[in-house]
Length: 319
Image (cartoon, rainbow, N blue to C red):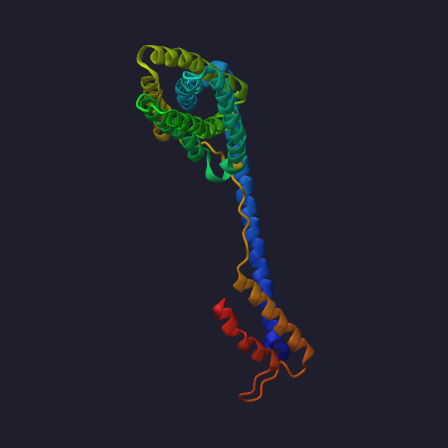
């Protein structure tokens, strides 16, 4: 019932108190929700650890089995491509072929580190699946290009054309850097995602690594037999067809394995309009406190603080 309760200062203070109370209640609700999610995650992790007491129970994970087959088929189609490229380059001139073979390795390894760095930085943002599919589908493209170049090598007669063809075959090592760089980085991360909460990461990594070594061994035998009996064009084509198997298996059978805790936290930013409103409300408050007549209205006259607030409305509407 006091006269000052109807002043703009008291009204602003009441609004300010209500906003603070609402903000505190909202933060308390968010904290309770986060605590419930954390307790649920701990409960699920404890259950998964109890379920994986035996290493044999790890074999019941269908994602692990599918991913192991993907690793096996990728290495089966990829390991022998580089030796076949080095052999096809060294057919005409063995002396220069040794130098060009070393250049193939240097180019592939140099750019491989760059793509491995990209995977480490952007896999939490873009997800594992997009980057992994990029690496898997780069191998069929590479095999198709090498098959076309191997068929064109039989038609080209001039030395200049053969030299250009060799340069193009060496340039396909950039695709090898894409595939091998992404695969070499992400297969460890995906294995870690699959083994989350089981306590069997070393066992799963050993399985996928063994599948990779077995695929590389079989690839060397298949590639060399096909190149010796049917030529390099058929060998590259066959390896390219095999490379579609892991790519489509990962596309249709593997989900996104990126866990929630690995995703980057998006910081909420206050809107510009809200910031400007708070600034003008503070200006009104201090202008009313400094002016003893600022809380009075006579007729149609307005106070200085109210005039400043009304003058700032078009600016806030534009924001």
